[in-house]
Image (tube, rainbow, N blue to C red):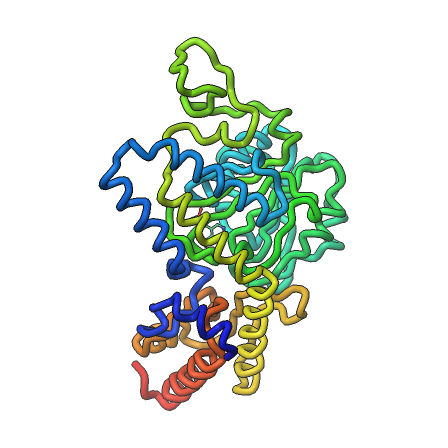
Length: 378
Ligand SMILES: Cc1ncc(COP(=O)(O)O)c(C=O)c1O
C-alpha cells in the first residue's frame, strides 16, 4: 500500500478491530466527520444559541462545497435526513405528473414514496442485476414522464451509466437515487442531465446517520411549489410573519425548521475530506480492491454474480455461496463484516481497506466453506 493510503487508513480506527467490508450498509464515520460532530457539540454546550449566526454561515459553506462536489449550484441543494426523505420531497412534486419508469432491482426508497402517492409505476426487468439501456430506451415513450434510477444497484453492484441515461431521457424528469455511488464515484448533475438527486450521509460518505442531500435543478425549483413549508422556508424567517407566505425560491425552502447542524457539518467535513483525497483517486482505489477481490474469489472457484465489465462495476461485489447465513455468521465471528444478500454475500470495501484484508477475507471464506463441506460447521 502506498504511503498516501497508509496515512489515510490511520483515520479509520475500526481497522484495528475487524475487517470491515460493509460500506453498502453503513460506513464507519471518517475522522473529519467525527471531529466536526465533536466541535459542534462542544460549542453548543458552552455557547448555546450565541453561535447561531456562525452556524448558519457554516451551513451555507457546506452547501457550497457540496454543490461543487456534484457540479451543482448551491441554490439547488437542500439538506435532508436520509435518501428516503429526499425521494419523498421529489415524489411530492412529480407523482402527479405522469407514469414513472423504474426497474425491479431498486431499493424501496426509490419506489415507496411514489407508490404511496398512487403514481403509476412501470418496472423495467433487470438481467442479473443489470439495467439495460437499450431496453430502457424502448420503454421511454408516452405516458412515461419520469425515470427513476439508482446510480449503483444495492443488490447487484451494477453501476448505471448516468451520462448515457441522461442523454436518453429527453424531456422527461430524470431522478437519481445516488446512495450506493455517492462518495465512491464521480457524479456531475450537469453532465448527466439529472433533474433531481437524493442521497444520504451514512454509507459511502462515512459521515454518520441523520444527514443527506437533495438536489433539485433550478428550473424545477421555479416551476414547482412545494407541498410543505415551515417558518424557515420563508425569505425572511426572522420577521415571524403569520400572514405572509413569501417562500424562498432556492432549495433551502425545504429546510422547514432549525437545521440539524451536527449532521450537516459532519457531511460537510466528509465532502471536504473526499475532495482533498480526490474522487477519482477514491474510485480508482475502490476498483483496485474490487478487481482483486473478484480475481481472488474466482481463483478459489467462487461464483461472482455482480457485473464484471469495468464500466458497470462499483464498490459492491456479490458472490454466491451455499448456506449463506451460516457462512456469514462464521465470518462475523472471525471479525469479518460483510452482509448476506439473497443467495449470496455482499462485500463492499472502501478506500481505506487493503489488498491484504481482501486476501485474508477470501482465505477465511474458503476455510469456512471447506469446513462446511466436510460437515465441521453447524
Ligand atoms: C439504493 C439505496 N437507497 C436508499 C437506501 C436507504 O437510505 P435511507 O435510509 O437514507 O433512506 C439504501 C440502503 O441500503 C440503498 O441501498
